[in-house]
Length: 128
Image 1 (cartoon, rainbow, N blue to C red):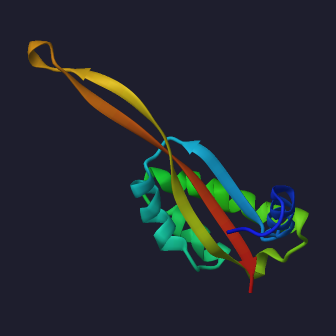
Image 2 (cartoon, rainbow, N blue to C red):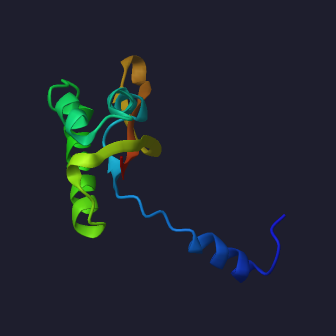
């Protein structure tokens, strides 16, 4: 159980800020499973190596993740003053977003449901 008043607990929780450069894409029109194939390939790699992997990966998610890595690198350089050549992908993950439900007409008046899944993709960098 938390100790102290609710405002004190919130103040303590919010005081611990994550200063690592990151980039987040919300509501990406790709399922979590498909995004994770690419994210698993770049986790722990240097930024240059990760961009090279993503550039020649044929999956759709790779083009989306390439932009995220470039955005996180720009954030590190401009906001945190980090050296882009020393950066590596410390964390990258995809969380489940909302699902769009569509119907597909079938025989004899039935309808099958099509679920178009979305995800929230996050890339966190750090310096070696």
